[in-house]
Image (cartoon, rainbow, N blue to C red; front, top):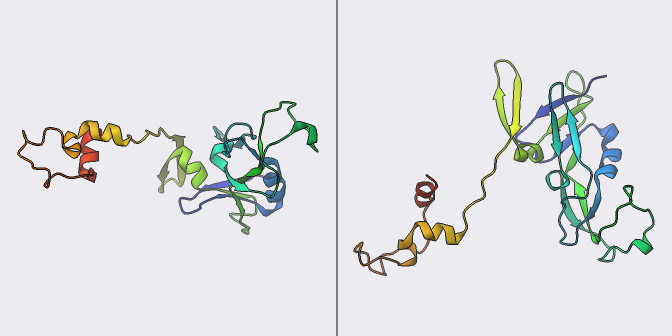
Length: 187
């Protein structure tokens, strides 16, 4: 039969049907890179819908967690060779675990219900149409926050530059930007 999906802003993980949880968890779990991050070498996760596909990379669907194994991966000691026959140094003391949970619901919503929670909503912008009972998803565009140096270049008074010309003495100056400053500088 058909699987169903729901988008939920209150679900912190990706919820999958209990019957496939163990298999999906094992397929998505992988070793981290040398920095201890979950980026790049794990499998992609695809949710195929009628007219589009939601694709999640390991960076978006997994989180690193410490294990009891030794730190650096040695291919000579490897029990199971990599499926793609590529070798890259990996940490064995850190594993990337998928951000999955199970939720068992009866008909009409379940039992084959996937709930797309925060991991999907961080990557995709969502629009909700309650009248027609539908959700629109589009790839979100995240703008990197400005660094402290960039913020201070927009507000010389915070660093004390040009205070005398503005009639501000050193005791009156602010030492950190306010939220109003940040919104003003973004324009």
